[in-house]
Image (spheres, rainbow, N blue to C red):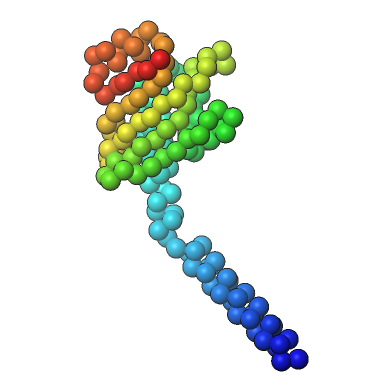
Length: 135
């Protein structure tokens, strides 16, 4: 009988502890603020990759729209800047091209590394120090 009361008290106290920690985790605003920053950075990176590639109907796989079949993507803070990786293609006939972008705190482009064979993009990268094109 004594063990039974002890078990019930233990389970009840663990349940209260889990409920309290869950409440604290859900109501913590720090996670939401970080997520809002990440969303803003990824949306800026979408605009930048579209401008860099110069295609109107670009399909993009990034941290906001991941596709595990295409590949892994991430967003990572690096001091006062951000690193965003993803994939893009110009249409169904095109293959997926990986990219890695470094963005400053104001979401301006610090550097972009792309794997693409588009001749116009290769010419642009020759004169733009922010672009690096691999094949």
